[in-house]
Image (cartoon, rainbow, N blue to C red; front, side, top):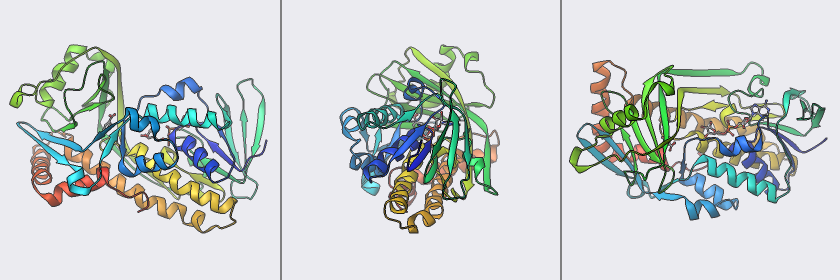
Length: 389
Ligand code: APR
Ligand code: PHB
């Protein structure tokens, strides 16, 4: 089998890349280890920054997002006894949208199906060959046990943090920070108790009140690494959330409800550079991981493939290599900006147990909430980065 771009991974990076390439007249085949049902149901963060919404809209993927997503002006930042609203629209002219990654993924699958795009699910033994030549290819085993070979002009490694693409870049440089805490996330069938997301610093640990819809809430608690989600009862979870989010303070109440999903996510920052080797290009989680505080993971994947699709269309259809040659360096500028922002939000909001850290965090939170310069810095990074920086 031959195609112009062989894409490994049918997450948001791989599917959006395939969609944008098709719009530029470049064919692709997507290979995915999991089933379609699995990739369409994965639960991940649900915040789209302004430029991600613009990009999805301009690619014809904005209809359900506009109809069912929820536009938010900002967030609440809080610590015991104080809650402050940061209004991103007033501060930067940009908003964010609450629209689950699961929904983005479903829209991408539907759009690729409508276009007749080939997505080969449930493959195994994916290996990359000759990526530094003009005739790179992939070998894999399909779900019937048949071994196949897929040749392409370029390979896009969109296979997340566990796929084979990142290790096919020889002598890559890697940067990593592992955090000493995790997020315990729940989904609950209850209306959100807040109009905007609440990011809460608390001596017991960070808490976040997010949401998926008018009837579904998503909440998180900072917990020690290695926590078993089944070791907490539903009552213990709601009690900890109520304490950390400030139930009964200034008349605010947290409404509990039936919990439909519990999971624990470890947190780390990871960057690999370069994001290109010969005709292999990395995008999304294959090249970088951010901790979830600030919800940059999906937005960064979208920004990577916005750049990469242009670079591959120019290289393959226009015989112009300039964007492909600049891809890694251009993408890394945004990667490091978001790596810094996610690290900053994470270390400002999670308790370490050290009283000196706690006082610095509170001083920083008070400054961000009370200074227009401080608030604008957070708002610009959260909502306002242009797609090309
Ligand atoms: N062959 C084919 N596909 C693979 C392989 C492989 N060997 N290994 C992994 N995959 C698939 C995974 O099953 C997954 O569907 O690659 C896909 C990668 O998708 P994501 O993990 O969603 O990564 P990405 O598309 O880069 O999206 C980034 O996901 O983790 C979140 O916070 C992150 O929101 C961000 C988004
Ligand atoms: C989520 O809704 O899952 C979410 C929201 C904001 C974050 C992280 C996760 O910073």
